[in-house]
Structure formats: structure tokens, C-alpha cells
Amino acid sequence: MSISASQPLPQSSDSAAGTAGSVTDRLVEANRQYAAKFTDPGMDARPVQRVAIVACMDARLDLHEALGLELGDCHTIRNAGGVVTDDIIRSLTISQRALGTRSVVLIHHTGCGLLNLTEDFRHELEEEVGQRPSWAVEAFKDLDADVRQSMQRVRTSPFLLHRDDVRGFIFDVTTGLLREVEPRS
Image 1 (cartoon, rainbow, N blue to C red):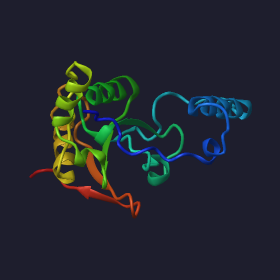
Image 2 (image 1 turned 45 degrees about the horizontal axis):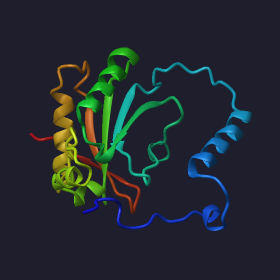
Image 3 (image 1 turned 180 degrees about the vertical axis):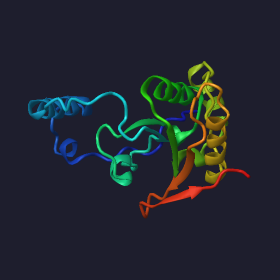
Image 4 (image 1 turned 120 degrees about the horizontal axis):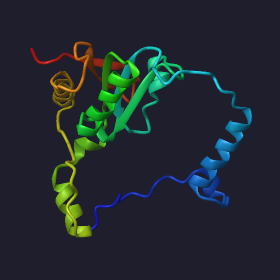
């Protein structure tokens, strides 16, 4: 049984036209063009807005554009689902303790791929490759409940200095609007 993506990825016009080179080759070339015009902005690594944003890795979320942010304004921490895992707590701890952030914004979104997965994904993966992943899928059926769980994980972490300004949202991928999720009372 294969659990790999069942649908082929859309081809870009470059690859459809037969342009040589991999996606990575095109990215490296784009970086050369970027670097040719690049000037060091002289920024500090500390985010100007003193905020860390935890969001899903979904390619449809342009967080800087959607939130009116500029380069240097925030730390952006992304993973599948925007779920607060141990590694997210690790990044937030470094963000707060070493780089001065004070606020945490959590952003999940409609149409998330984790809404269609279960922990069976791990079992299927183990059958396919012969090794069980050490990580949990962290799939969910209820976006609001998962945002609340993520807020709770941040608010109860002993490693974080600033746990009072933690807010969670759901980004609607069809309208671009955020909807705030209220924490458990």
C-alpha cells in the first residue's frame, strides 16, 4: 500500500514547455538574481513587532501579505497544521528568551490537509517503509478545538516567559479573512 500523494502535482508552464532544470535549480537561479540586487538592510534578528506567528505550512497562506507585515517584523514558525508541538515550543522559547518576542499568534486555516488524516497515516507509513515514525500526525477534525488546544499548549509551557498574549485564528482560504477563536473559559 502506498500512502504517497495520489494526485499528480500541477506542472508549471516552464516544465510543461520542457525547460531544463529542477525546481531547486530554478530557485537557486532566482536567488542569484535576488542577490545581485540585494543590499543588507542592517536589521537585527529581533523581530520589530516582538511577535511570533505559528501557522500551517500550506502554500496558500501568504502570512506577511495577509497580516500587513514587513521583513523583520515577526518570527514565522510553520509546520503541517500549525500545530503546537514540542519543536514549536522549542522555537517559541528561543524566540522569546533569546530574541525578545512577547506575543504569540496561532493561525490554522480552512481546507487544511490535516482535517482528512488520522493517526492511521503513521501505521500505513510503518507498513510501507518498515519503520514507525517517532512523531504524531496531530490530525484533527475540528479547527476551533485544535486552535484552542494549541493556545493551551503555549499558555501552559513552563519554558515560555510570555504566555498572556496568545491568540488563535482560523484563516479562510477562500476569503482571506481571519476569524478569532476564543480560548476555553
